[in-house]
Image (cartoon, rainbow, N blue to C red; front, side):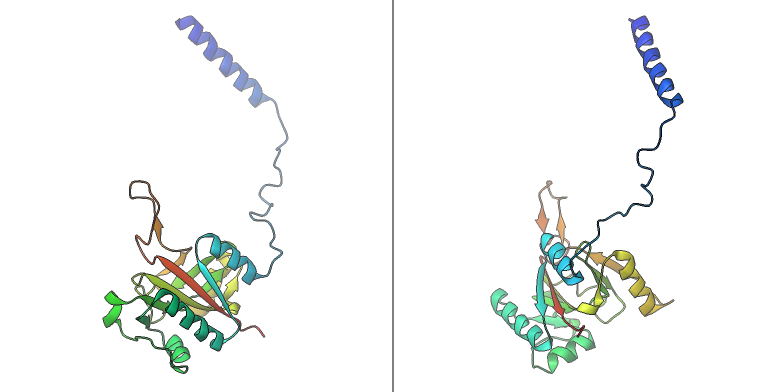
Length: 215
């Protein structure tokens, strides 16, 4: 039996040696120069909306601030949202001028139905959102409320993550926020008995309200 095993081993090694001695052209000679993704023919907002909804995100297009308010009201009525937190002055000013009710302190964080934040960029390629703690929303508002609403501008759309990080670098320079992250769809995990659970580590629902600002 040892002889047969040794013979089989030798045969296998002989084939490997012969294969290594035979010089062959690389079948993928242009691999390093080939693009990782195919070129997108659709506009950035269409690409983002498609990819974002595929990961169970909710995309709402707004042609201006009034459209944003109208869609927020419809969402609040649909989901019976009573308490919405907004800590960033930019969001507070935008919603306040139309009388949209929001809470502006963190004292209601544990009972909030939703949190509204801005973002650093939207990544069209995979429908992701770039966030940081470089503003008043900090680390908590995008995590604790069960519904996370992101208000973004069309000019914040970029194709890839490298372009999103470039925007962050241009904005903050050498004073980068201590937390820069991307989120792709609502929070989910399969750690619990290998079953998909949505909202285990963060919001159960994620909305992006995209305001057109590229006229």
